[in-house]
Length: 420
Ligand SMILES: Nc1ncnc2c1ncn2[C@@H]1O[C@H](COP(=O)(O)OP(=O)(O)O)[C@@H](O)[C@H]1O
Ligand SMILES: [Mg+2]
Image (cartoon, rainbow, N blue to C red; front, side, top):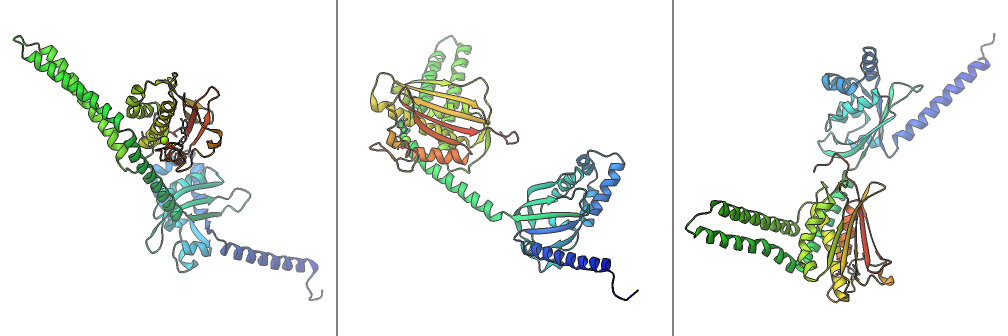
């Protein structure tokens, strides 16, 4: 045999060279990828899972709840084997060497997440993603999206990938936008309160007048020789009720005037409608407008800001009242309907017997400062749209075939976990 390598040896060595060149290329590619990436050797967790399966454990979440030490053990034995440049930058590390160690540091700000990552791994998921927080090496909290990709057979069972993307700035911008939207809605509410002043004054005057009447009647009964305790008790009860009623109204006005943090609670649109109507009821009655409300017995809840949604309804109601008043026709009505709709929506619609909307104006209704009224501000509908959109909904205006305008907004129904 000569000393020269046989053809098969050449092939193998050639392939080995090729493989390592390819691997080199991929490592470079991964290192410079603009996404923070961790390669993790999760064999320690895999082995522990194997033992648990052999013991017949199936509900891993319950098991880890009962044995938190296993989660802690995993944080110290599952190892980061490689990181890229972006990962080092995200954690404000000095270099990859800082980061190649047990995964515990990844969970410093969201310790519970380690358990959920393990549950998904045990369950044979392909990916697990969660919005979480991380703590950088110099002690800063960052909001992130944390994603894990698990190996599935026949892939190498020891390699798990983690990517983390920083969403701190995005969340901050979103919060600022929400605040601007809320401020805008608040300024508009203040101006609407002006439009509703007469109606509101009347709304508060009613219970106050009832208190005076019942108080006078009670005094009258008390001045009789024969004391009728039952009668006086009844009158006093009415006084207390009216006082509560007046205080509720004032509270509602106060909320309208306040500049609160926008909230997301579970709401029944039927109740919100009733509250909105209390602001304009007097206007509707004094202008001799017939109001009908068509609401089904049961309605899914929506999630939103109570005061802002009242504001949307009040704006739509005021527009309808003003439109009807403008024509002075004999038929004066507003019809409100609330419906659950396909696609998990609840829709609120309002039709009126006003003159309707000129075709040329239909596209501009929701623009800020678009108005056809002499004293109009033109922000009512713009606010409606901004609020409805911030709630993940949509709003549209059109003409009724039978005459008059028709406005409709739809909101997604609430997911069950929101507080009520
Ligand atoms: N119910 C309605 N009927 C007819 N036109 C309407 C109705 N609602 C709104 N509009 C039209 O849309 C315009 C913008 O409404 P809005 O944004 O509330 O501002 P403003 O009420 O101050 O004019 C109104 O000026 C009017 O032309
Ligand atoms: Mg208006």
